[in-house]
Structures are given as C-alpha cells and as structure tokens.
Image (cartoon, rainbow, N blue to C red):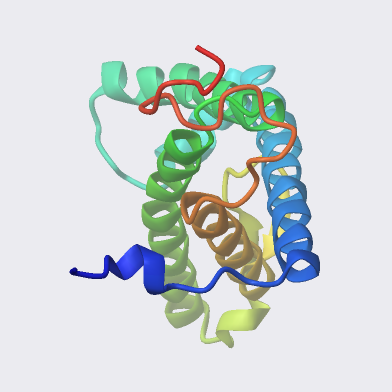
Length: 176
C-alpha cells in the first residue's frame, strides 16, 4: 500500500485554520476595495491618467497609450469587484500580481532616475506614479506595492475561500 503524500500532511488545528481563512477574506476585501477605488479614481479622469502614463515612455504610439489609459482602470475595477464578491479569486489575484510586479519595477526605475538626476536620496523622491493616490514618497509606494503583492500571493495560495460566491472557476461546484 503506497501512502499518498496528501494523506501524510497534517492539517493545521481548527483555531489556526479559522484565523487563516478570515485573514484570507480580509486580504480579499482589502485588495478588492482598494482596486475598485483606485481604478475608479483613474477611470473618472482618463486625461490625467493618460498624462501620467505618458511619463513612463512605454511607447509613443498614441493608440496604445490611449488604450492603456482607457482600459487599465476599468480592468482594475473589474478585478476588484471579482475579489469583493469572491468570484475567480485566484485568477483575479494572479492578474493583479501580474500588474503590480512590472508597475512596481517601472516606478522604481523612474524613481532611481529622478534620484540620480536631482542628486537626492531615493526615499526623498516624490512624484505621482499614476496609481490614483496622487504624489507619494517612493519608498512608501514601494512598501505599499510589496504589501499588495503579498496579499495577492496569499490569495493565490488558496486562502480567502470563506464568504466567496465562486472561489475557483476551474473546479466544479460541490452542490452541482
């Protein structure tokens, strides 16, 4: 008889498991509310967001720039709403993580360039990075984005199932 590795794993005690489940729900709601709010703040002022996106010199193609400025905020709102309701949580968390990582790196690159150009410490650099929160000190922004990435990874690990309408779309529902 071959023991399956999953049968050898001991689940955490009930109080720890409950705490982890509720921490996952809190992570889901924090990310959801934050991305709905920040997405709407950009979507309601697309011309201001377009100017901020233009600062990063991704491309000079106006169609691509306009598409980013028009579509990205609504995509953030959509992912945030999915997290709040608890539908496709892992997929939404993955998409947010795939947005957060490159944007954080781009913000860091721009902050390093400003720091070098103005001969000031990195943590003294302050500019509007386009996140929807206005001008921020870059070290604070990098810490915030790191925390958001940790919360996204927490949801990717499978936490936050409680109070969700449909956590995972790839698995059939148990009540079907």
